[in-house]
Image (cartoon, rainbow, N blue to C red; front, side, top):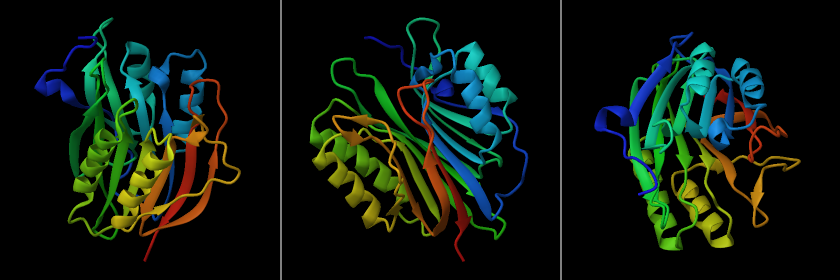
Length: 248
């Protein structure tokens, strides 16, 4: 096995402090695959993004001491769903969602495993309280990559399960590894069946694999105010940024 399995108490962990009790009506979102935060420029760019973000969706977050320090010093409360521990250093690695508010509920699921190396990919759902007494459901996804289409379909079915019976506003984002036309179709069908709309980035400077963008944002009952993609050398993925308003 090329990774270590986290113990039950390690799979979900939390860090940092919330700065508000409820989300404001307008808020900023960032979704970024950190590529394990291995680049020298990562910490500086993370600080800049975290300081202007109300909800942060991170993928490939490896909780080294340096990364943990940056997360704790940011103005956000973080929850990490770890798929595995790194062989070197035993660092929790997975998806991590930060927010200016404490979630009222947190759910994590394993979305599938990569072939051969068998590394699990995680889904993390956080329910963030709004000023109107409702919750915003935020789903952070790092989808399986080098797998057959049926495995990807099962991964998206796990996303659909998280959306089941939730009728409020939704933010779905992350690295979906949708690098083929068929994968894109499955992803978009999953979102459409739950009443979600895809955010279009123009110009579209999202990171690509085999010519296809792999990072996406989808929403329901949110009004898009602005969006863009930040060029970076701190990861092999460019961060997605968007500002939303809660729909009436």
